[in-house]
Amino acid sequence: MGSVSQPQRRAVLTGGLVATAAVITGCSTKTDNGSAPNASPVAAASASSSAGAPPETPSAALARLLEGNERWVNGTLQRPNQSVDRRKAVAAEQDPYSVIVSCIDSRVDPELSFDTGIGDLFAIRTGGQVVAPVVTGSIEYGPLTSGTPLIVVLGHQSCGAVKASYKALKERKPLPGNLQSIAEAVRPAYDAVSKAKHADPVDAMIRVHAQQTAADLRANPALAPLVKKGSLAVVSAYYSLDTGRVEVIDGTPAA
Ligand SMILES: [Zn+2]
Image (tube, rainbow, N blue to C red; front, side, top):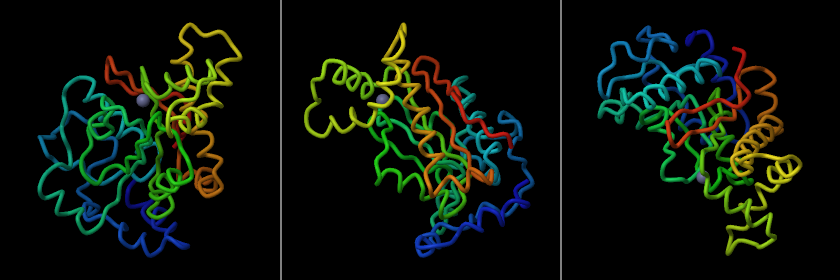
């Protein structure tokens, strides 16, 4: 699967980002070792092992992430790509296979939650994983410069940022400092949730906010053509603090 779609990932190295893209193109781990992206996660991996070639398609990338999350849930971490060799290999060039947009919450760590290593993920973290233009630029970086095939917008249980925003918007009491900009960013989710009765409106808002953010990214003029072509998927997901499990909300790629 990897060798077929490699040109596709490289084909997006165009436009003003070429200079920076040159820094991150290719991947020294990409010299095939024959391991399939969907290989059993439990098989044959020891600590600091290599995870094999990075997945090339959105669905293979999502499968790789969810396999890693399963190991996190079950306490069977493989800690792939955390060796000194891997560090040296990606020092020259990187080729992460997913962009994770998640919260600053200290309990939600993308590299741990998906059992990944160095060079595997572009991780973007803001309070309540809200997105603004500079953040969107960081999200676009992988897909536009090296054909990263997957973006995951990861909301999480008991998100303090969403909870505080819900309260501020409901009571019309602005949050202090720049925190209010987070509340404003999640206002569309608040408005959507406010239209119906929810047993747990904050949890509903967390999920809706992740879905809305993913939908906005899919419609983003720079990313939409890649989504349409099928070379990029944007998935919304929810992380349980209790179990560690990542549940896909919507956007699962067909292929
Ligand atoms: Zn949070």
